Length: 134
Image (cartoon, rainbow, N blue to C red; front, side, top):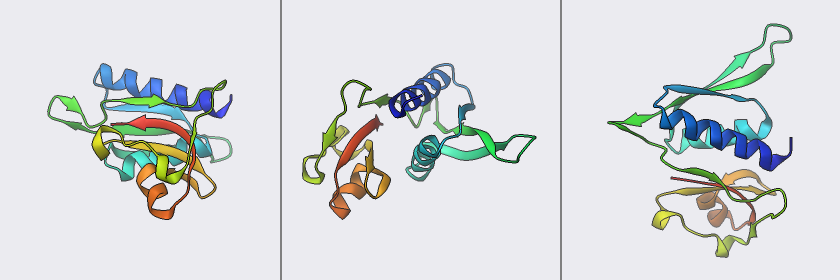
């Protein structure tokens, strides 16, 4: 699977789980999905991120994401991949778009790792726009 397919799969799983008001969702564990999950947790969109260990080697094959709900709606209402396999979207630090006037976030792949748009602006790096979340 390519990077963009992994992100699209993760976004679809989370969107579907929120639509049917599930308390958690399981996603495959890769460095990319783990980084995005920890950003979502840090930004307050998830309650917890739990690696699920496999029985053979002890490495986690999946990650369990506990979704956060406030009242009847989820804290995370929108997640969408931006770059596609055929069309990669890049942006410089000072050209990064703001989602909902700064209320949402964009996750980027930069030379400094997987980070949010706010952090990218603060350290002055640009990169590939992976997904938008609000």
